[in-house]
Length: 169
Image (cartoon, rainbow, N blue to C red; front, side, top):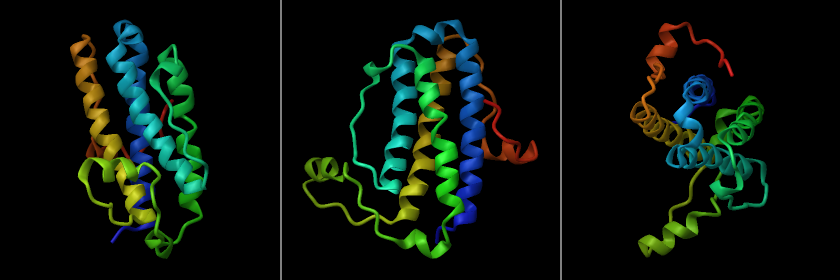
């Protein structure tokens, strides 16, 4: 079972970890022009924003990384996710998380797999964002290391040990 309180904690960690990754990206000169890194940052954050749009009932709009010339533009858009997601989480009850939440891009899964996807719930989609973000954050940290940078600790347990601090953007 997924609980609102657990999601809120995961999202607080997620924002803290994303902000720490961005602090390294911004300080690393090679990161500013690395196309692979820009595309990974774009994918991570625009997936977050796509799910946010579903939760708010917005029309789905596919976006492309080449809409953004600089990674700073991606960061500016990315930062809008956490306040908006926090407001949604603050207004939810555990029972809301079982609400069916179809995803407009599920048709891509149907095309690739040859079968219709099972219905997802609001809670499952919110959990997916946390897990998807963690996956791609690890890829970004690997890329940072390849570019000569040193990623910061972004593990959940590191956040807990640090006293669950707020994100420092």
